[in-house]
Length: 271
Image 1 (cartoon, helix red, strand yellow):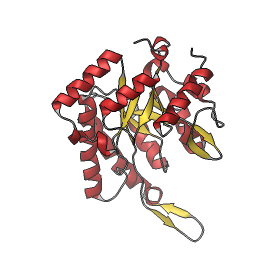
Image 2 (image 1 turned 180 degrees about the vertical axis):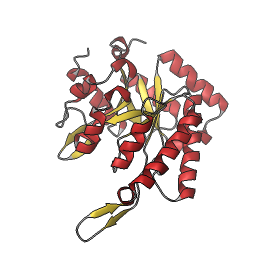
Image 3 (image 1 turned 90 degrees about the horizontal axis):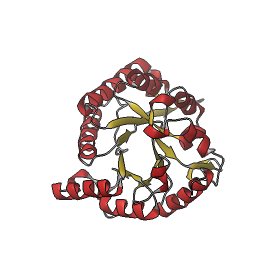
């Protein structure tokens, strides 16, 4: 199937969450609407690994090959690698391992995860995060978690940490330690646009970006339809290697992502 995105060397997909019955349903919708990629959000029950048989996986992989289509995956977000609670951290790592296996088995190209965050205490004059107060300990905890995931993944799929949520020096140090050595980055440009710490981190690590979450910011709120806010999306896309990065429109619901794709094509002068 002719797809102008592929001709221009771009992999542009959308974030698939609620409203789909299966991953097959996502692919059919995406191809029909002109995408050549989709990010499967593994928070959604319809996409959980245990729902898919070997026959289902075989059928999905055939669809990907037939349509020259990429799948990327977003890990569950109710996990935490940045916690002193050892059982919670252990369970989180095990869940991510299962998800990595599933994503790889489906031929996934990218696997994005959030590191999580430590508890926040409200003081009289400020807020205090445990990962800031016990920085060296939390850097160690997060590094141990990431190393275990990198070793388990064994370069089967490109593992990407996202700039999401509370982004502290703890995350900076832990991520930086592994970048290019089994860990890469998902750059959420909407998150970074409204958070200077995140933006500074990403701008100094552009060569490690392998996935980008694309959306606009309007009225101080992110995940808006592209072209309705302040973010110069083409500019940020131009900063990374388009041949090595998947661009995921993270605007929901799916029809809003389709509208964003139309707007993005105009901004990029894609016919």
